[in-house]
Image 1: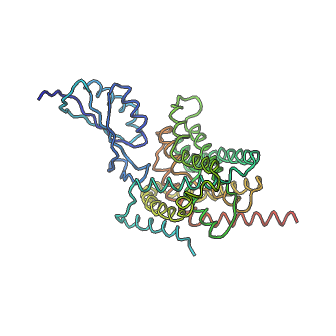
Image 2 (image 1 turned 30 degrees about the vertical axis):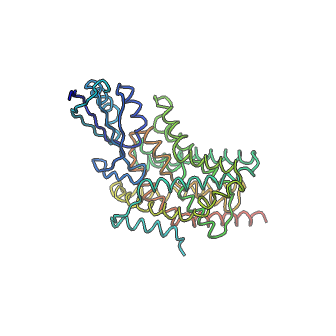
Image 3 (image 1 turned 90 degrees about the vertical axis):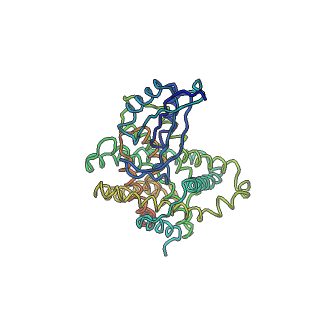
Length: 100
Length: 317
């Protein structure tokens, strides 16, 4: 099995940002992404997802390393100060590298 | 005797404070709030068809003017008496200038119980009153000059879930008329109070969650969250008198002015004024003002409107 390594960028943030982030992530070169509704707790207190204002999303993007770096830098510059947001990256093996 | 729908609110509040496992699944809460918004919109829409356009336009203009005025009254209080940062003061002012559909729904149930009539096109004024305060809030926080993602903000304000459902309901009610709606009235009208009860149960749980942050942010927000609606209700009742609404309609306008938003405005503020702390505005509007209004405010504003009517009747004799 031939596999190539790509970056998996995972972003966990406030649901209210979904629309804006979806546009910006595509604009920065990612070919696609996956969004999930999640809940949890962090420095902004519990996020119970009981209603719109307390819900979080997890956005997962598989892309090449420069794109992942560009998205991470953009998010850090624009959202870290005022929004609840974390992001992390890991290496993942993909079977169709041309897709990402 | 306390209205049974309010007992559901108290049940949610108590369960939340005791840290019960109880929670409404998010999808159920979404559905219940959709039904509430649609049925309020439909009810208002039916009546809209019967009203002359000129009268409606004058009332809408009056309500828009009030929506612009209320946040401008609240802002200096928050900024100077509360010593809050500009963004926080602007955001909270926008919350208080806008309206709470849930408070309106409780008031509808309250008036229905007491057979108090009010202008049935009130949901139209409710929809109109949601928006101006958001724009003022953004201007107060940002000023005119600063670069702003206007497209995103406009989208958030006019195409937010609440406005789309409320205005959509109004339009469907207006187009279909009372006969057209009979087939769907069992869901939207007959079940209204049951739906409201479920909604208030979850509101009680959400309100209980706000109490923690209130403890951190001190007594100012508590005082503000009670004093501001009391003052705003006077403005609303005065506008009702100027517009020559019925007693019920005048009281309802007082209730709308006194209520503080927690759906449309938080979402719009989060996008357009991100540096404002959403915990503060929600703690005040949900933790203090909403319970105050539904438990004490509604009967109080009704009594105030009744007094105002009695005074005017006395003066004109």
